[in-house]
Every structure is written in structure tokens, then in C-alpha cells.
Image 1 (cartoon, rainbow, N blue to C red):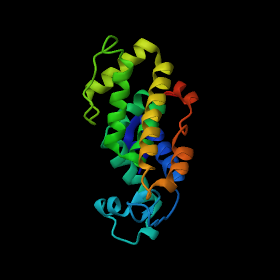
Image 2: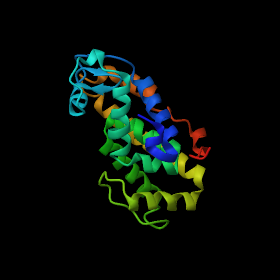
Image 3: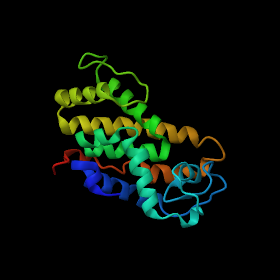
Image 4: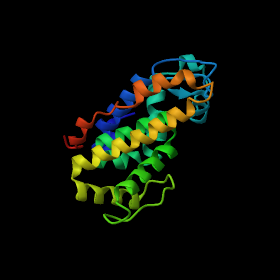
Length: 202
């Protein structure tokens, strides 16, 4: 994966992917994990979907990085969010890897609706898990209404509220109860609000 492939946000995407790989760690085959074998956070099913046929234990980290960039950033259009707000985009990528890209997108859209003050500040968007022009326009309107940094902070706080509720609900099942501490420790607060001042241009 080359930064040049991604244009002006290439370096940012490389950094985001690198942080995800670092959090996910190496090879795991936990019998309580419904995803089965994983390496660098990539499940065996996802690896096979992307053409990797070798043993999961031996899957190169470069393959994982390519999968993250294509499937967890470009496909759900989180790269467009990264270009507007690196912190919010990073949070969406992280949620997408751990809880699903569609869920991350829906939580983002719902957060925007929550912050629209019932549509008084800007039009509500469909919570359909598809990030497009209307969703991005709503986020731009939120930035104009609250300021760039505050819009980011509020959005991340709401995203983490949805994320925490999701994890605690999952942990009520016996198969997932052992994962809650790790989810909360590694996935909540992992994008500091101080990053809301960042921009792609630096």
C-alpha cells in the first residue's frame, strides 16, 4: 500500500492503518471468538474474501494493511470523513474494524441527527449506513454551527456512547463476557479529543 495511491490523505491513512494493526496485535484463535482465526485483526473469512489462501498464522502484515485500507476505509467512504476531520475519521475506522463498517456509519449518521437539534440546525440524514454527500454535508453544517473542534468532540463523544452500549449489550452473553474489559480499555477513549484540532494539512 502506497501513500501516493490515496492522494493528499495518503500519509494519514497509513498512520490510521498502522494504529489499527498495533491495537489488534498478532495471531489469535480464541474458541470464544465467533470470528475464528485472526491475524493482525483480520478474520480468516475476510482474508479469504481478499484472496489470501495461506495459513492465517503466516499472513503478512502488509496484506492486513491493504485489507484495512480498501475494505475498512475506502469502501465505507471513511476516507472522505478523514479528509474533513482526521479524528472523527479515525474513530469511524476503528469502530468499523471492531464492530462493523455499517454499524460505524449508522452511529455516525445517528450522532449527526442527535446534534441537529431536531433538524433545527441542519437537515437530518437517513440512518442507512451509507456515507454519501448528504451525510458529509450534515457534518459540514455541524462544523459551521459548533465550530470545527467542538463538532469533532461532540461527535466522538456520541460515537463512544453508542459503542459502549453495544459492547455492554454483547457482554451479557456468556461467550462475550470475557471480552468487555479489553473492548472498553482499548476501544473507548483511544482517539483523544485533543486530536480534534488536527487537520489533513497539519
